[in-house]
Length: 121
Image (cartoon, rainbow, N blue to C red; front, side):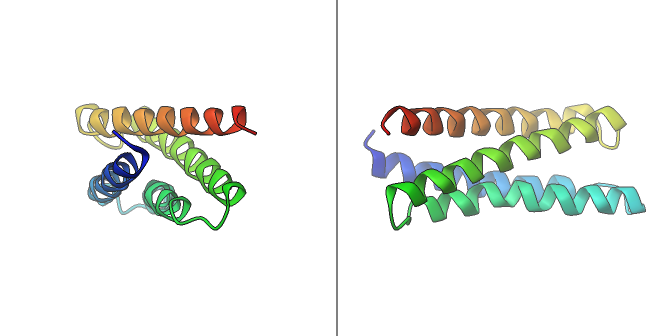
């Protein structure tokens, strides 16, 4: 698969993650704590794909590298919030396992892209 095909496929994957993620976060409690976490997690979970899309339209290699690092950071933050939700038992574990798996895979992909970009410097 060439870079363009990968980029398009990965944009679709990160958008699907954002949609699935919003559906999951909508199930969090309406308590103050639940709203705080929902706000944080909704931002980080949707920002992954938005920043990746921006990276694919970057004005320079440095801009691309910067936006990939943002996506990587947002994926890591999303995983953190998912771990909090799981440990607080705010949602059934089975419900968030697939989302956590995808978040881990996205983080691994962004980390790999970031490392390969640093090697090309």
